[in-house]
Length: 216
Length: 216
Image (tube, rainbow over all chains, first blue to last red; front, side, top):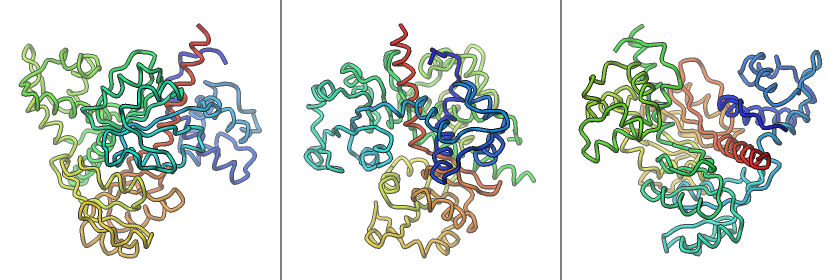
């Protein structure tokens, strides 16, 4: 595939949703689906769906619709899910442990290679057969195990330091759960999960809704 | 404040970030800040910042900048963080436990009132002094404790059923961690945290970056 710079983040953010719905359809042995039917399930307009999928290639066929298996496969390739990624979790607190136990991972070819923490009470314990290691071992481990993705679950004030260490050791992708914006060089991708921001969005929308109701 | 329908989700999603940066400034005893300085920290353009904050009122002053404490307070009110919310967690698995242990909650006036699960091994255990209860008790509990927000951490195939129960019992906000799109009536707000979609976005961007490098 050619280099395509023009695909907006909005389209990219919708791709996993297409993937999820198509996988569901495929599981239910649906062979093909029109953009209209897909629209009814997924909640985007049919024209939006056609436009989105056109960004990546010519998947649909007039009057036939989309071949579910084919489209699912193509989207999985676009999402890079056919690749293997080696990951580590840094910070084995609540969130870190939850992520380590998150089995969806394995299905998606993210190989969890190691878990790291500074807490001596945790070091040596295992989560799903993976030992929690001392942070001191991180440096060498990252290079030896060719880690591509670091999952940062440490407290806010330690997150930037961790990001510096992992990126110095070849990590190109960070899944960041710490509530800060990490500063990294341009060739590193950071995807944030900021739980408190999500909760504030909910709070905002609830509050707005209440004000509307008072207004009525 | 009047009812303002026109504020886009993009602006709303940026508000928690303003809140976070302003709180940090306030902690560091910074009294006032220009949109230019704020821009350098937060990474939005100064004009974007002025435009965003204008959606909610007239906060800045030409030549003076923003009063940090005042702006922080106003944004917290806009976000509804001056309100109290009663919440329950449904599903005390990995994610549910992590969220229950998530202390940021308390700081934000989300009162965790109960945790529910179907697993008899979990029922009766406590997380931060809150007992895990049998799902059978959920119905009555929601009404008795005036629960506003339900945090859904059950498996995918049980999430819609849980959403139906909580909304029937007066819950108006759902923080959903299950990897499905819940169907709820229009007066209910759903905020999703879809971890697998976030991970796929990271995977996509990493994969694109690699392709670019091959191309160079």
